[in-house]
Length: 289
Ligand code: IPD
Ligand code: CA
Image (cartoon, rainbow, N blue to C red; front, side):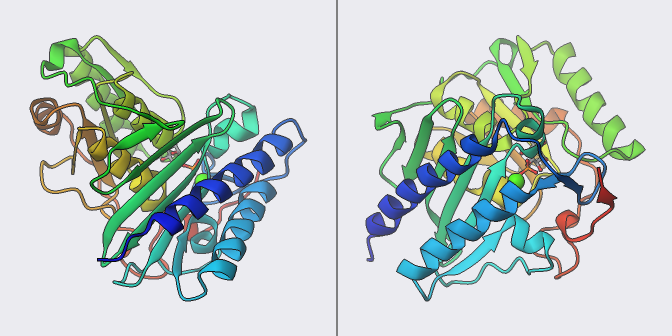
């Protein structure tokens, strides 16, 4: 069995370097372009950081493949094969980056035979490096982390995201999901503006659950294994097995909480990330801010 620790260690070092590039650009004036909606933003830094990551990884591992948010936005294809594949979000939380709302992360997952071997989330403003390797636990800055283990939905803090969709059906579904959860009741509903960091809150027990409809594989591939290795449960919002391409996820402290959320939330239709080359939301551009 290959041991992917060399790749993991390399990924951790370049995630930190990428985070420094993001931090260095945080206070700068930004030139912002729009992708699939008026709330789906991209900056020169997103593209630069992704290019740096892919360039450095390719230099070291020339046969590995990539799924990168900005490469897909530029017309690349989302194709997860059995080959070693790095799944990259150079900045998860681009709206936060543009507004300097202080939560954003470099997210890097690595999959072989379509199975995630490790995930790295570097929340650069907080200087928090989360990582997990399959079967070896989850860590925050080198210290083991664990989910809360909470089983009672009425005692949960639930994190979610509003996402970039602004059409009527998506917005009404999202707001009614929040309404139904609050009515259960739960202790609170939160949103940090970055799916990767949100899910890492579940991994550390700061939140008890996370759900999201409409995100992409690069937003959640790394944090999904971090939650699982921290003792949590990751599934589809319809209660089926987690599928990183489905655009739907629940990550929770326990099966009981994940299943409860699956019963409460409804999904709006989203094309799978791996549907076809032009299907992903990031592939079309609606203009400039
Ligand atoms: C976004 C963030 C945000 C979520 C969106 C994602 P990006 O990723 O994770 O929290 O609501 O659905 O697309 O575009 O900043 O990488
Ligand atoms: Ca991004």
